[in-house]
Image 1 (spheres, rainbow, N blue to C red):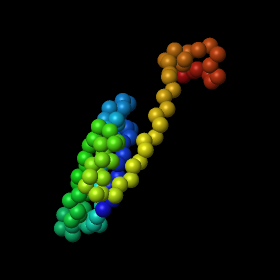
Image 2: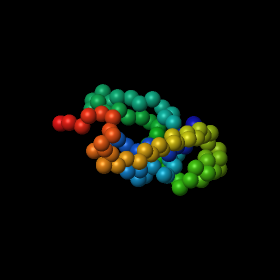
Image 3: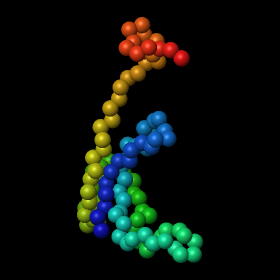
Image 4: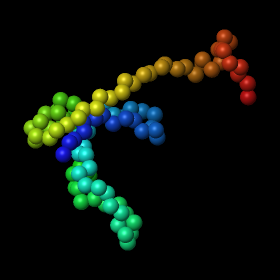
Length: 101
């Protein structure tokens, strides 16, 4: 069973980058999900799919996977591009677009 090591992306519901510096190790699904005919809930017999381990660094996650003999794939995080913005730039006199209501 292969594991995936990655850093989570920030959610669309937050403006900060909290919680995106830690590394996660999660297992790939080993069994298909099945819908319960009575309740309609989806479930699986694979309990490892519910497990997500967190590590401070990528090297710690890789060392854990190698220690336990788990094949792994490391997904590198995307580079965060930061453009500094200023509220005053909305009112510059040499602004390209017109500023009207």
